[in-house]
Length: 300
Image 1 (tube, helix red, strand yellow):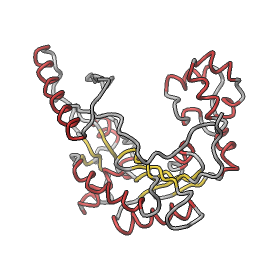
Image 2 (cartoon, rainbow, N blue to C red):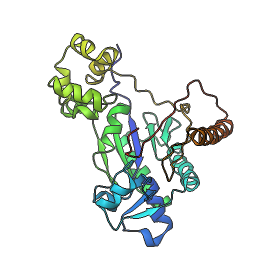
Image 3 (cartoon, helix red, strand yellow):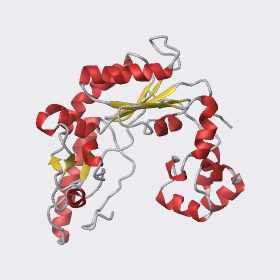
């Protein structure tokens, strides 16, 4: 049984509203205004929202219609993924000046293990502050950070003082932090599992910790063992600098409902061809294919 090492120093860096912030950086007219990267039409969806838009409860994955209803003066901006991909390596370049143990999660977030860093700085909190300041000075973008002795806790902590802030959870405070954490914040606990836990009187980490391993495996099968360990700080938390990309996707949103089977197959073939080209460019192959269908009511 492996317990979180009290001596690892893990930073989780998360860019603040990355896509939206890049759009505001590149266009003075958008600065200080509520914007949403994505589509605003009947079939559109929000990929990212600026903090000005979030004040009106505009969120990622929200339908464009609902976003506009919540914020009538919302400005929709078409995504420019090539631009985001252009900036992302510049952010990572800063990371690598401090450590080679960098595990990117996406274009705008990553884990860094700074236990033995290139600067010889013993303080992970000061390193995180310095990295955030450099991102601001060199790229004119803001980032938030979480610092702790595990990836899981660092990731949760990075969200506490957003935007443009950071939070450190010291090793001696981790278990209390986990006990006070709402159950839906735990890694691996989705809406379905959280709902079941509520019915069992489990609302936070303390409630979860009070349950035996036998109780949790009885109600949650193999996941029960995971829940038992994670609330006690028993988990594998190594930062993987050679992390492999696990998925490649291609999708398309249609202006009108598809009702013709022939037309559906035709469009599916085009999406499949696009996916094939992405696999070739990434020099990877897949083992499993998942087909996602989203209906007009945005149910998947």
